[in-house]
Image (tube, rainbow, N blue to C red; front, side, top):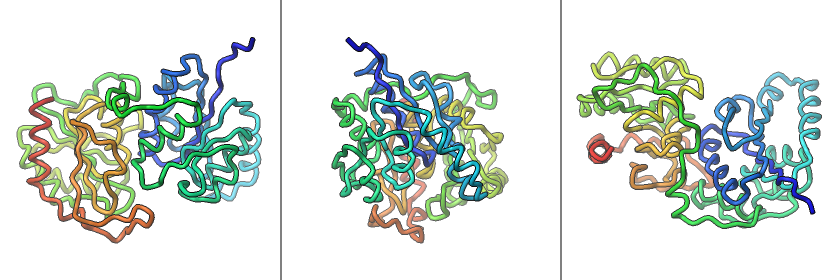
Length: 335
């Protein structure tokens, strides 16, 4: 009798928010396969957020972006060699559904499960899978992650199980820059492109309306740092946090009373860590989050085509401060 633990490879290369949202599958796999050995393959820039995860046996950094930028063929050969040597796995699951993620999965091995041609983001990716699931691309992204993994491994997950999930990352110590006598509200002011960003002038209004709170401005790029500096000059209760590593970012979000932010990775950490949040949507929609009683959304009136995102849709600017504050106060009262 073979009592060898199931060895599972998860492929989700990018982006930060999608990797964060995908981590919920780890505890669900462990619920059904407690002894499973799980390894995650992702782009090297995002690997640190997964390092030392209690449900992961190994994190594989895949330097695709660096290979493309530097046209480093020696690194490409070394990466392919490492992928081939990482197996064998009992099951390889492509949670992304792109050609690049399917190719990575195929270098790992052949026993691949992913989305079928009708539901993969790039239908050609499905050609490289041994088995596949039809999970419409328009479905909620977190539910898609869960369902493709559950289908691959032969179990199902209810909405109640998702709502009662444990935090997706291990607890960390409280950052020293958080106050102990006021509410700490993290404001995620940046995003992957400008039309996903709530105007800095309205973030100032939010700070003014939440004047008894410590508003922590989360930034990543130099441009976002300048954005934060503009806000603190006009809002006394706003604080610019230091440049944070991904681990430090997770710890900060974990210990805040509320997170208000654009549709981007740092905001999604709130849901992953079971912290109250309000995510702001303009050119994207609530498909990108799993709404709960404490994880809410504010949307513009834009008619979003998720298959063809309009990066020139600046409708996020029409979301009123009053709408956000109404939800924020209710969440703060119950936190």
